[in-house]
Length: 177
Image 1 (cartoon, rainbow, N blue to C red):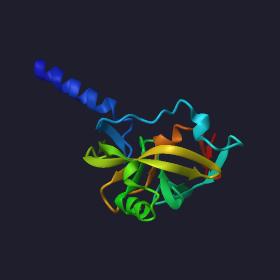
Image 2 (image 1 turned 135 degrees about the vertical axis):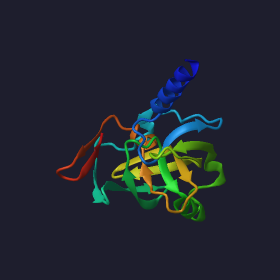
Image 3 (image 1 turned 90 degrees about the vertical axis):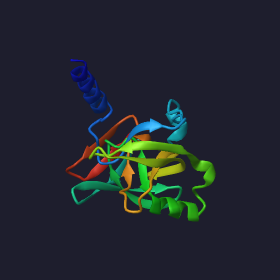
Image 4 (image 1 turned 60 degrees about the vertical axis):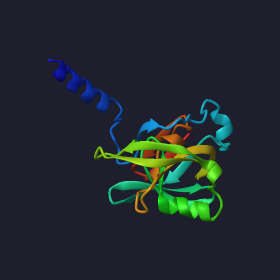
C-alpha cells in the first residue's frame, strides 16, 4: 500500500512541475541561483508606447520571431511553455566571440526537462539586452543548451516582463503590452 501512495506522489510531483512541458525548457533545479528582480518592470522595459507588435513567421509548425540578444539578431521560436530564453552553444559562442557575452555573465548551471522527459544540464547566463520590436529588456536570464543544433526559444524569462502577451493568428502578429 505504501508503494502505491509513493508512486502516486511521484507521478503528481513530476506532473506538477511540467506546465505543459513545451519542447524546451522546463527548469527543474537551480544551482544556488536567484532570479533577477522582475517587480520593477518599468525600469526593464524601455518601450515608451506600451505596445509592441512583432510579425511572426510560421516554419515547420511553429512561430518564429526576430529578436536581438546583446545586439545580435536571431530568429527565435515563440514558446510560452519555455520557462526561459534558451540558446544553443553556437549562438553562445557567437556572443562570446563578439564580446557581448562574457564570463561575468555566467550565473551557474541548472537542469532542464524537455517535452520527451529527458533531463539535460545547461548554463545560466545574464543577457544584458533583449530587443524585441521597439522594446528593450535588460538583464534577462537565459540558458545555453550544450548542443549546437538546439532550437532558439523565446520563453517566460522575457515574456513575463510584459503585462499582456497575445497573438493575432489572422495577421500573424505577436502583440506585447
